[in-house]
Amino acid sequence: MSRSWGGSLEHIEETQGSVAFGAYLKKLRETRRLSLDAVEELSATFPDKVTKSHLSRIENGLALPNFPRLMAMSHIYGVPIGSLAERYEIELRRSMKPVELSGKSDESVLREFEGLVYSGDFNEALILVWALADRVRASDGPGETILDLRLNIIVCLMKLGRYGFAKSHCEEILSGPKLQESTRLRALQLYAETCFRLQLHDVALWALDACEQGAHHVGGSGRYRADVLALRGILHRAAARPGDALAAYEQALEIYSAAGDAYEVLTVRLNMAIAETDCSRLDSARDRLEALLLVLEAGQHERLRALALSQLGLIHFRSGRFDAAEGFVIKSNSIARAREYNTLVFRNCFYLWQIAQKRGDDGAVRLNERTLRSYLARIEESLPELDEFRRLTAGDQS
Image (cartoon, rainbow, N blue to C red; front, side, top):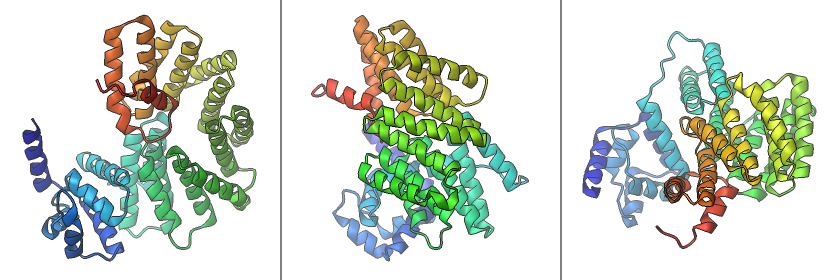
């Protein structure tokens, strides 16, 4: 089996490629002032040497690197392997599903993008907005327009749990010259959230403090301040301060409501229910979620619906109502699996695993445990259920 896979991989490596990923690798190499010969020499100590002829083929979109060569390049270029692998995967997805934008205006593409985001189709939204950014860049469009599109790319990456890749995008933007203050602050806010998700809490707090200090440049009581308050609420929750999180969410909700931002109003209402759960106000949280689901069921916001269903499952699980909990997390998973919300799938399966244990259903225990183990490497962010699963299965390699 392994020999067949290895041969198959080498065949793919020699017959297919990604122009975009190759161009990115070339830019990395040239930015670091490394020649093809230098990369070959530096890779000599790694398990799979990167020859200059093969690297040239990769950079020109005529071949793809296997994982050992990708690992070598990540070390040589000083780019985290996770970030490089995520970019590699996404470029492969883009090449397998090219987007046709001819005959469409930028405005119509953006409207289509916004519809995909609101409905939770983040993979589709990512491919679409990336294609638009490529078109605007190729036509020498305005730099600020390109930056705005890149910020939208980062948002999609974060929604898909690609935090390492999103963080590298933020760093590229923030290190660029002559950023408008509104762009800088938006990138800084996204950077704060990616760092938080990657458990770089000190950096996240520093970035969020800088966001709050600069909020007056883009309207101290406007949308940006609401975004910062909502993020502050997330950090309060992570620090086990759910009461402070609720206070921050309430302020954000007031601003979003006044601005008529329906999607963010729904998001904050969901986060408030989660914070209430943390405060052990289970009845209040359940009522809030049930009211929210009435709105979500009538709309297109699938990610928010999946999250709300999962949270209701957690509340019923904590209340000992296992049949109801199982029903809610199964409904949540029917959305989450199809749209690759990996963190949510893991969380739902964790509770299905726990429920199966309480019922003594060994077959369901084994099935859900296999699923949980298969998702372990896909979760980048801090997740209580992930930490608990690792603790409960420590030393069990079955």
